Image (tube, rainbow, N blue to C red; front, side, top):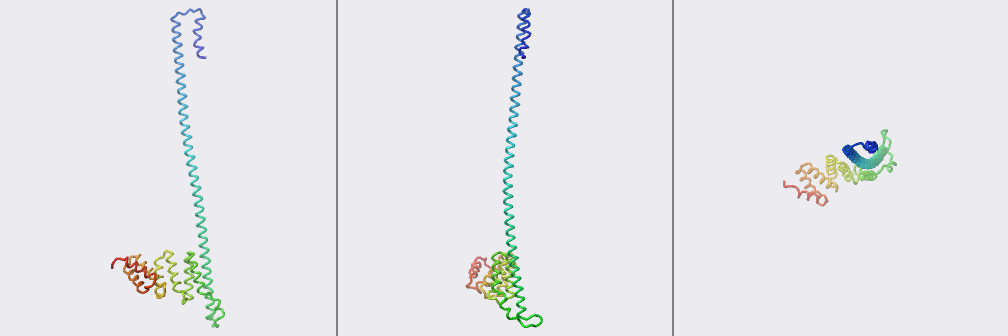
Amino acid sequence: MRGRLLLAPAAALLVSGCLASKGDIRLLQDDLTSMRAQQAQQSQAQEQARVRDDSLTRVRLDSAIAGLAVLHDSIRVLSARFADYQASASQALYQVGQQLITLQNRAGISQRQIQDLAAQLDTQHARLTGDSTGAAPDTSAASQVPGPAKLFTLGRDQFNNRAYGAARLAFRTLLDKYPNYLDASATANYIALTYDREGNGAVADSAYQAVVAAYPTSPEAATALYKHALWLLKNGNTAGARAALQRVVQDYPTSDAAKLANDRLKALPAP
């Protein structure tokens, strides 16, 4: 449309009778050529600007899409990790809860059993020896008194279940009620073991020494004395440990503890 308007002056001159000179026609042609060149340059510049804007827009759009993709992947990974964490934490808490319930039930039941047995022993002891009114003992009740074997089995079962407090209560009740029990030395050794398993080394060492003092000829005495020597070594008392180990070898030469003690003595530095 614009080109037609530019040609209009030339057409008018021709129609008017070709009154213009050749010079005027040449100038007009030059103007037309210049105007067409300018128009072409403007069109080319506009096209280049449009292409440049489209390219920039495309780059920005691609960058935004890439950023959104990275963000989406990060969110997906974090969501998966959080879900895994929730699942593992929930399972761990559940397992801990179940273990606590089991331990509480074991400890609670065993302590009640031991307390019931102790109460029965006290009741039967009162009946057998006579009450405060001076009544004669009730010998018929003797068969109802729980035997030491029952207490020993109960304590050992609780020890194997790692309910060391309940086991200790059973073993102490046994020794209190039946001090002359055939396996009294093993019972006393179990008491020391409960402290040992709980990590209470000092109290365990005292209990081991009590085993040696109360039952010096028992098989448990050799092991208890050897463990006392190990406790002394652990606390830096090399001289005391050497004396205890030598006593194990001399007093209990045929015991397994004597062999262990002899090996320890060889490993000790010269006095």
